[in-house]
Length: 627
Image (tube, rainbow, N blue to C red; front, side):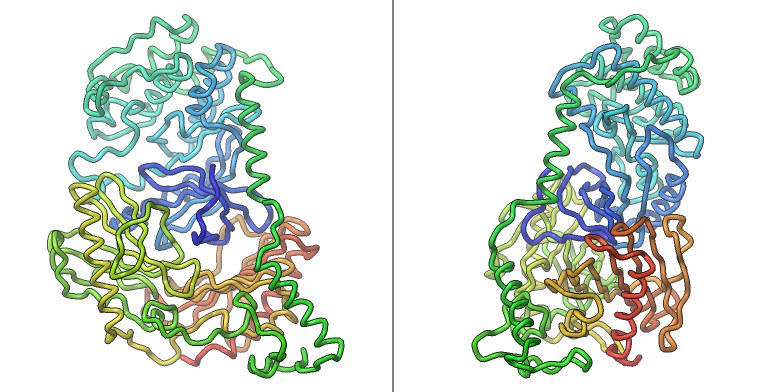
């Protein structure tokens, strides 16, 4: 677990994220907090998967099925967005080390702990299989040792990247070689018996500290999985009796989770099922979470500015300089500027126009699908527009069918410092066959212009392609001439933080401590509670039927149809969101406004949160351009 890097986005969907838990072949896992105060683990699926034509639909189906799994030994799925530029899934955060971390730190588990582990995993797999799912990636890092027993995470996700996909090209492996079943290693159809093979391999690792099939290379390991009988002589006879049939090469010869539970028999209660190292790791992790959530107070410039701004408001209200009235619309910034002070950058006022071509004001005008259309990228070929459904990103296709993304957004990559791109410092991040390179957007601390590509022959080839593409994009954006088409009423050019002024915001949701431009089209107001405004292009909004919400409704605000969804989880643990379509683009998409108020840190109820959200929406709506 480590804090997010400076400049990284602090939100995913409706969750505030504050730490990175890890990263793997399928994506990145972040630690976040919901508006009701619950900790969540958010898996952001690798961006490359989003470009598979069937991925999003498979992901949506698997997530819906995964929500049916709610056993005591799984981490329940809370939320997901398969339509996000980077699809994500949120599940309940379970404090505890992974099985891999526990064994690496403290060695193999004692036999009593193995029995608890086996019983918990068998119950979890039974719940998963009854829901119609196959885990497909059961391995030590996907098993969390919580204080009262194991938890299985990430069930049902691997299925979404299987099928007829460029991501499962010849030679690609979905899963973890040492814990795959033989049929999975050979690319054959899977049944729930595949998970039982992984279960057996996992128990061997927990009991001995080593995987029974590990070879000198991935192909060697996969060969062992398919052809070699493992040496199980190190196992206690009681455990070997369970593991051996699970590791049968023929799926039909493997037992069910119910059979495993019968063999284990009654599990005696224990104050803790784990050796002492596990409670120690849990305590250490919880202390780290506490430090990340409540960092030591610092007298930062931002805090000093906020204090000065608050003092200025008191002086104005006290009659020293009576320049504003809270009952009238916000005056122009110059009307409230006192001679002795000037508004610091984080005070929520309209900022001067940024003249830099790579600044936010110009980038809102740029159509990224025009910037590289028809351009030839060395090692990749001539680019043609493939996907153009978002304000701030475009996906291009090469003659060979590979995809390249060019985007402006808040997903600032973690990576190493790279070469200068047209005089700008860059960050670079790559894996075996992919690469992403980003340069900062001038004057917007959470935002970058980035190019990325996946599924090339090597990381070096991928990085060469994206560096060339990004350098060409920077040159052409600076040269100009790629403005987007601007139909009447579009939201594309709007800075959401400039729509509602500081005095009005204070009156509606305040006092506002800080207004933060999250990226080109997102604004966050930190007040007593918090409010976020997003201007997005995407699917038309509908009334949510998700059981997560305790209240849903359809409102008429000044003739606009607005969809309300609220979670009422007690005072200071609730939130309310409002969504509406501002302008239709096609039957499939449009320009939408998303607004959410959370009660965190307040004594407001969910109904009061909705009243604040509605009051803000009623002020915001007339300020939007007419379609």
